Length: 472
Image 1 (tube, rainbow, N blue to C red):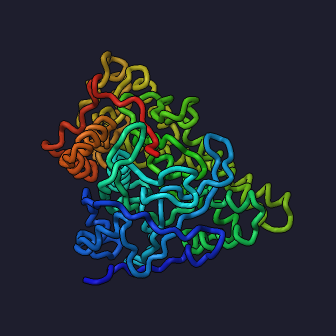
Image 2: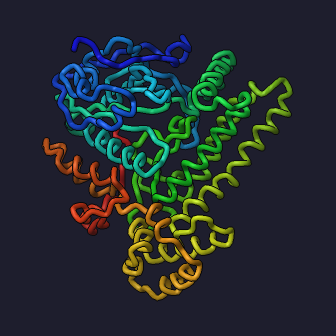
Image 3: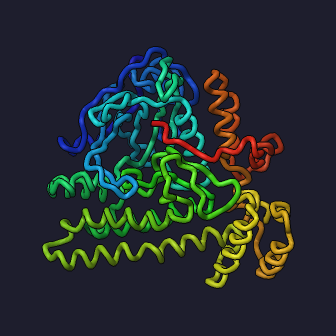
């Protein structure tokens, strides 16, 4: 085969100058295969056998751009830990282009870790193997659990060292998303007063993600509704994004940028893993409030597009953002109600959920195992003193839970931090068997197989991972 069978149709590149810079990936010394996501390739209508060929490997490593690709680095700004950075952009990623899947859905294909771009800010633009394996495993788990998310199509090694205080093996992740447009993309144009490009971006997002929206306000309401659902789903899985800056919030509603992300083992609402989150701004319990803050920044960007009456536009945008809590609380109640086996939870059931979470926090009970234990009858084992839990359990059982509903809402396993670290440690030595086993297990998260029982276990004290890193 002499060319890549990828039918690119690059709508973002057609937006023209100002939205990106044309940037080729930097070739690597010796590409090596780590993982290819054949089911995702089929979803995209791509030829997995070609992707697994030497030509496909060259594309996935950034050594060859296939016909139809228009490699670009996207421009965006962002509030990082509350402070505005007026220019960020893809500093270590290149968007090859977009494909339209057999069902008509449009997806970006991006190489992450593909070398420096004009937005690299003196960085090397590379990724080392650890963050690539982490994002692959976590994003594919999230997809399997039903969370809106970017996906991982492939992971390859580069045959080159990346320096992060020491020499580490380099790698490239092929990331798939319904788009890579962020709240920070809107901020980039709004802070420059570039209303024409802001309007073009808004029209593009409406056509691509919110075709039923009535203008900028309708799009804002759509983004708010999707983020409410996504964050509620994070909370129900004990997921902590770790770096919820506005440049890490996708307007599609997908979870994006799995940097210092982690899942809780022992439950506590104030749990933080990210090495750079020293104030707890992005702790598990803070994520809904941060989402509102980020969405308020998006709303501010869109006000100039909401008509000539600025006061009226501000009022409408404010009302839209103020609608987030009710949407989120409804989504939260559906998610946590289902975790208790309540397909149609009542408002009074919130107290039942919150009582359990308080007991779990006081006992340091494992988040995933406690909720799954409601299905198996083993939840009490997560409490050193089970008596308060057993009191709660009697009230819960009186509510008449449907264990089939609970089983469908509570995964058997998650990509636990210590298991990801073990897979990374093995991968650094060239042994990818633990990584492949972990991915197989977490992409069937509700399948209780004996061969994967060890992956459901919480870490021993010597195995616990308490800090995670961005990987840049």
